[in-house]
Length: 305
Image (tube, rainbow, N blue to C red; front, top):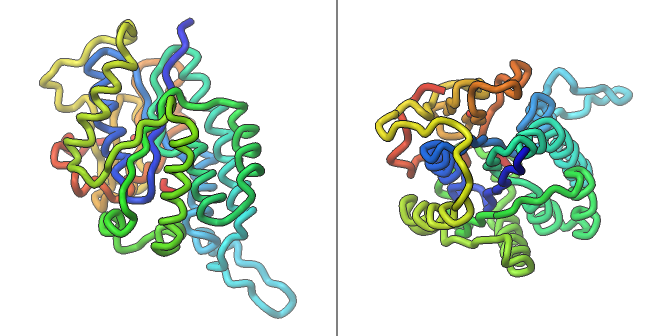
């Protein structure tokens, strides 16, 4: 059984990760290379609950507001930073065990919207937690699994902020100073591992960014034999979008998007035993960057950090 290829997309909120991951998926499918788009947090059913908690705090679960003595604890209270880091690690452990590693073991290409570098950038860089602890925790949760290639879409947070929707999640709302710290940590990680990282100027147009990624994908996949029938060039429905809040993981290679460019579904290739019905209803966050994606496929059926 051949080993697959693990690729991650990183960057601050609004950098355009999801748009480029979708284009990469289309490109690989057209080459007959079986691929999967997934994301962290929320790449599994358990991860969806974790995603809601880390992105929206306890206000995502108002029924769980608790009473302490005579005082009701406000369900919108923010999470402790260590709690947040542990939740991301739990999401990653489940994601790697249930989705990423099984698909890699059968030779698929994984396109992951955020992975362990986001934990380091956000929890260590942004929150100020001990970086060594975050690195060890993330590595343990992922059982040591690292991407072969990481595309870091680098953009000034002041510019990317304009791409985020009007109802930002907890991290999007953390402020420009926080996002600057996150960006700086991403760039530091890239300098430390230049063989894995490809840093791309995300202030460029969607097409210009994609051209850089496409050239690199051509090199990475050179010599890889097709693992599925090659898609017809005019097959506009190879990946499609659906307006759904937390739509289906596509058992038919479909991608969901909910109209406001915030939540869209994970893509799984169709026609195999790993397309478990239990993995339905994955909510896949767009970073709100798809407003710039002029060439999106028509809507039919696929994180936010």
